[in-house]
Length: 98
Length: 370
Image (cartoon, rainbow over the protein chains, first blue to last red):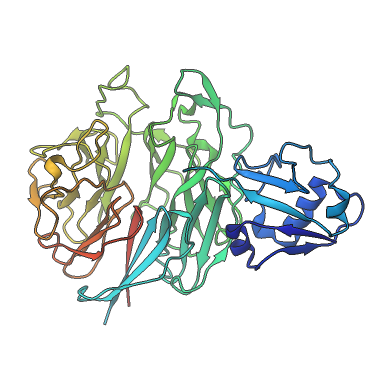
């Protein structure tokens, strides 16, 4: 089980409050985590990654254990602390726009 | 007694304003989709409680929201706008060819006959259609075949902002794109042709080019769908043959630049514009917010000022931000970038701000409810 923190607007879209818990089978990669998130909350499809290319939207960031994973490839394994549920995988709306 | 519902899209959410047919007292809703850019909200003519809304964000992309209870509750529907096939390229600011990239939905136009059918005008310019209430979208790619490789974005982006479904000929659709021009389909969107003959734009290399004109808005009266009125970047234009040929009707306006244009609900020759000072200032001339009305189908215009600020006013009125209602005494509505929505219940003679301090207004639509 991993815990994912969503920015306010994505919580509103997904109709959740606070962090969400996801159960993944197999390797817990960045891409697998996002696949599981979108499978559970289909309304988030297109809001984090492009529908077709699955590229991260420019003003979305992925943080975990103090690391910026935004530029990592989808097959990158999430840190062990995230996989064990001790640390939160953060989907962040970048501070931008003034 | 009839009611009136005004659907207001702003930079930071949507608002629904309601009144009875007197249009004197207004209730303003709490913000819907607070913090999101709400480019356009429009109701189905078939089922007025079916609303479609374009919700977008630089951060989180495009959402389409649908309501079946007049905006009390909403459901996110489909947001996958994928161009048909390889969309190729269009002209870019630097003269190179640039790939087509979906950015946002500017305009939603519900079908005149089916509440589940709705059209979307998008940036980069294209038209999409949904026949399942907004769950899935398919492009009508024939539009981009109308010299799309020559289109290029204006300052606001290469947006398809106007969709008009002909109320008499169900196979005819008009669209307008900044900065490509106006286009018409006579076969339900399969094929399209530019309808820009007569437009003269000195700011493009070939002033009378077939495409490349910065059309800001087109409007028509439903009983005379062959007569089109256009607010171009500069010039008010008129066509009486469904866009085959345009002629200028700017007449005595203090500025022929502006964004919206609207036609009176019961008088096909009565037209409204809001002159704006340009280039680049984009606020009313002399700091006076004036709607101009022509009762002669153009050329002769009168300033409507009663109730509108006549000093120190430097707001803009954007292209989607004017609408008319169909009550016996026609109501006219427009919103400003300063957050006011002004209404007139007497065809423009007198105005009042029905709400004053919203975020910058992007769009205004109005519904008359039974």
